Image 1 (tube, rainbow, N blue to C red):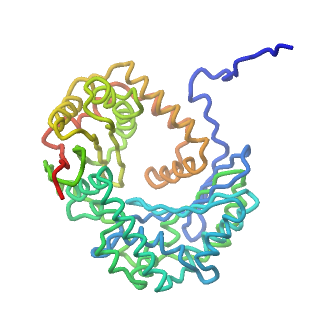
Image 2: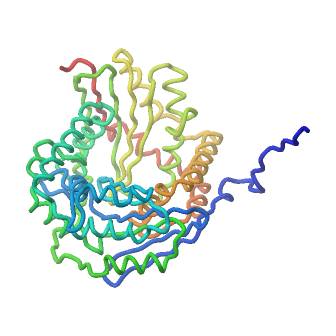
Image 3: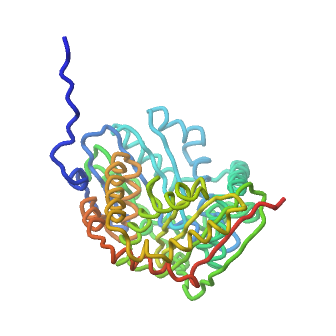
Amino acid sequence: MRKNIVSPSIGNATHPAERLSTGIVESGTLPNGLRIVSNQVPWIHSVTLGLWINAGSREDPEGFEGMAHFIEHALFKGTQKRDYVEIARCVEETGGYIDAWTTKEQTCLCVRCLREHLHLAFDLLADLCCNPVFPPDEIEKEKEVVLEEIASVNDTPEELIFEDFDRRAFSRHPLGTAILGTEESVERLTGKEIRDFMRRHYVPSKMLVTAIGNIEHDAVTGLAESFWGHLKDSPQEDSVRRLFDLSAYRPFTKTLKKSVFQSQILLGTIFPRDDRRFWGLMVLNAMLSSGMSSILNLELREKRGLVYQAYSSVSFYDEVTEFNVYAGTDKGKTSKTLDTIAELLTGNVLKEPDPFELAAAKSKMLGSMILGMEKMTRRMSHIAQDMFYFGRYLSPSEKAGMIDGVTAEDVAVAAAALGIPEQISTLVYKPGGR
């Protein structure tokens, strides 16, 4: 008997934003200042729990660069009740996992598990951040692990050039230091410096708990109170974040010979934070860099055959915004690639954006948002980023409205900073080093 094959329905939604399903988002603050945001997603069986510390590599003390990142590693080396094997096993044996990462401004410890193991997830994260013991022999072994991580970056020119660019753009400021630090700074780290850093920064007013999954806000708040309600802030004033003075930015043009097969090209600039340009910059970045149909890919790869890969990136910090364009090309095509990128950044393609390109970029962003919401760790990260950057949670529908409202003029205004040649810095790695 022949079956009747019916194409799957996409529902009645005519616009991607209409398919946004947030669940219930609630927030609150404990008496000690610890913030909590929960997102109840009743159609899943897992929980993604994050403990965020508003301290990243820009808080590293001078001479001890890489401190925040190293602590992220060292916390897993043992606590007062678990050794490093028990830390790894206690969640993994339930089918879950634990992860951690460090950025320039935040550190995150994250556990993903089944909802019935939420208490275990809280217990483990609290144990890591409140009861670490930092065994000297384990700390020395972990230094070797981080040194290997640094060596890996040094062997990856695409990563290294971004670190090198920031070191020059944010000269003599912590935003310019590598998240991993250097071989020398990591070797200097001791248990005393680690504990001093944690006393300053692992405090409730600088911490955020995010819980995503089939959970209720009251349950999350109760567990947070139980495990972290006793914490108190440090009286030390040196935990205040040092802002970057934009007048210290000196645009540069530098070409270095490196042991690379391709020329590595990185252009960029930094300018003051201006939230009015935020969504315009995001749409601009999508136009330039989102997918195979993006402007950079079409112009540099498909039309001219200059590159295999090219993309732009935008980084938002507390006080400044950084915009970069990266490309890798044959050494004989370096000048042509640089000229083409400069033409794109200063030409009418961004000053007078094509309505079709603008609409396509916004559609890509909305679609990407919907897809991202299906990944709980990404959903959790977006909530945390909102809280740290904007000071509040922005719902997907609110973001969709802001994206949809971006005009060609908004993109042109956002692109204005990229169209000032004297403000653009250029760093090139050319083949030829040893």
